[in-house]
Length: 117
Image (cartoon, rainbow, N blue to C red; front, side):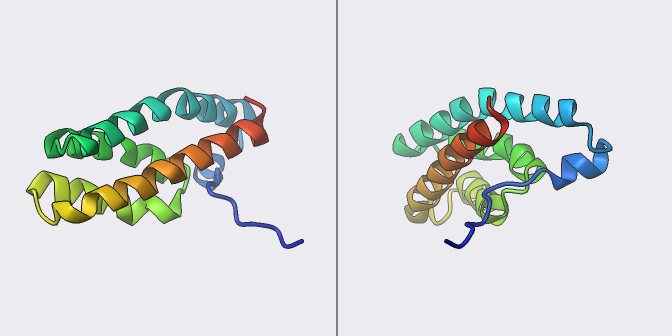
C-alpha cells in the first residue's frame, strides 16, 4: 500500500531548534491545544458572514500553518485573510474556510496519533 503524504512536517522546528525533540513535542502540544478553538471560531465567523472576524482568525492561524508546513493551506489561508479583510469574493470564502477547517481537523488528528498527545 503506498504511503500517504503527511499533512504537516516539523522540518522548520528541527532546523531552527537543533532537533530538540522535547521542544518540538511542546510546540505540537500547543498547536493541538489552541488551533481547534481558532478553527472553530473561523468556521463560526464565516457562517455568520462576519468578515472582520474571519480575517482575524485567518491571520491568527498563519503562523501555525507556516511553522508546521501545512503547505496545502499556506496560500489559501492568506487568500481567505485577504478576501475577508477587503470584503472581496466573499462568495468563495465559505468553500475555502471549509477546506482549511477540514484540513486542520485531519492534521490535528494525525499529530495526536504520531506524537501520542
